[in-house]
Image 1 (cartoon, rainbow, N blue to C red):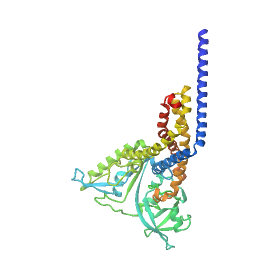
Image 2 (image 1 turned 120 degrees about the horizontal axis):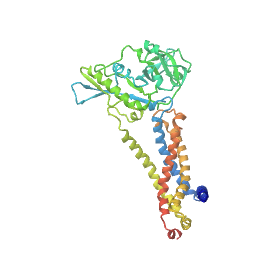
Image 3 (image 1 turned 135 degrees about the vertical axis):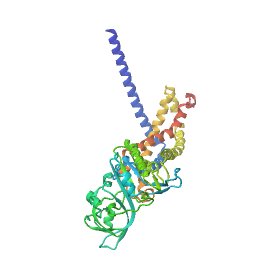
Image 4 (image 1 turned 180 degrees about the vertical axis):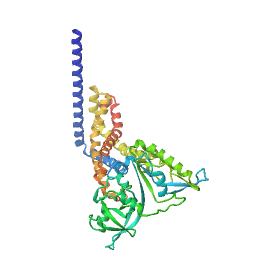
Length: 444
């Protein structure tokens, strides 16, 4: 009985002490926040410099981060980037050249694609694309505009989430029959027809008449694999050019995996298909240089190179971001230390009453965090302003920016993490310097 009462008493005491600690910690945090606001008002010039310095650093970093996000993340219409693989070129060698020297790089032929890529079993779907820049016009008008045409198949539409303003993609029957039908972009419809209600009307693509079967809403050029002014079936031609034993041609391929986990299986299947293809070649053999590449890998793709070194490129970007954080953080740490020097007596009194080094460091970091978050919020706003004001330069002609591209939860999370890192870099050294001073020096 006594043991039970003793355990109950110990449990009660432990619970009470725990609640007291939580209450004290909560009050300390509230006190830190009040103190931070007080210091913000008291040292207006230093606070202003700290906030603005943080804002510009975060703004530069967030512009780089947002641009990288626009290039890599899934958003309309390229909603399947994370599951897509790309074959963008091939290289040919003389069959009697086992060391594979003096290779030639090129787009791939339709014959090669039909034999090695289209029959793949592992992916969800495969599409072929031949891109050309040609003049566009209509029979009833004198106006001609330049346009990018992608000759493709019906599978292309399944890769992307297009918003059709009128009509739709050409059908599989149209594709198989080689019917001259075309989907056009909203911009082309308004430029040539001055309306988007143009399904059934005729458009000339490089002087060849096609019937418009659909109109797609405008979207950013940064969705480069989806983007075109016109989409038409490549079967409208009976024959496409092919060189070096029908290896060279006009086509690239995109492969949609059921899951990113299938990427290696797809690559193995392609390698086996290429080996079978090369066995029947008499003069030239073909290589794909470790293709297909994932969307992230192809961001660093260069013609003629092998598999892009993702680690090296990511490390380079990481170093740039770190420098952009470190340089202003060093300058801001001097301001933070100057602000702390004025409060040495207060810190000495706190140490005299038993405050630990960790508690003092926590106080400095917490107070500085308010300035950093205010600067970070301003920096995020400045980064969006910079994107819109300098989009011709930053976006390389891709002037259209959707809210979905720049306002994802990941971007806000990264902005917050950069703020925390900036706070640690700019206030960490001053906090450590202040916390290690002994009571006597602090009270002088």
